[in-house]
Image 1 (cartoon, rainbow, N blue to C red):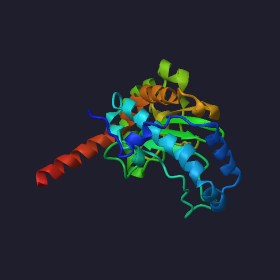
Image 2: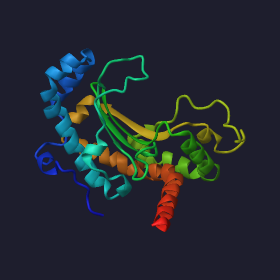
Image 3: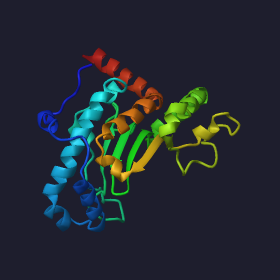
Amino acid sequence: MPKVRSKQTASQETVPPYFSTEALKFLRGLKRNNNREWFEARRAIFDRELKKPMLALIERVTDAMTEFAPAHVRPAQKTIMRIYRDTRFSADKTPYKTQVSAWWTRAGLEKTSGGGYYFHFSPAEVLVAAGIYMPEREQLLAIRMQLLEQHEELRRLLNGKRLRKVMDLDLDRAALTRPPKGFTADHPGIDLIKQQQWGVVARLPAETALDEGLVSEITTRFRLAAPIVDFLNRPFVQNVEKKKQYIFKLM
């Protein structure tokens, strides 16, 4: 499969795919001064020390993902997440996130949740995660229905020895205390069925982002977690393919 490159590829290749001490200093300052005046006065620093290295990092990680997650390959500009917070429905009106982040969604699921891959760099940590988080109601039910028959497969994937050496389980701390409506309490997979998100996560020191091995730290974990993401997307992929076939018949 050909590698997807953004229009900025040529310039990004001259930018190292990791961050500087100045980037970490900026994020720490933003956490203390989360306001537009402070940010706008330092926007050039943000663009140079955080945005450009982040785009370079995303491109390098995405290149590696063509081998084990080709359906998640997207241009860097569509993978990077906005630094601006959505404050419309939040009591916290601070305008900026205090981390730079990226989300590799699956093709066909861009407007929904779906399973994917996530990275962020904050003043406190580097976080690498994979799974499905806050799925829509229909997606939540679809995964639970899949777990009725295939819970052993997901349990085996979540507990893979190589994976668990570098990532921890990231299940929902607010999991249901009772079985969802229509599911029995004595089902052998009920502990997984009661979850409202499924995934794995690694939390590394913030200084990890300053190391030349950052790309490897991320891609190694994404590669090991890929079977979990594929499992979680399985029921949605079937629906996407059905829609494609339907549209093709109408043409």
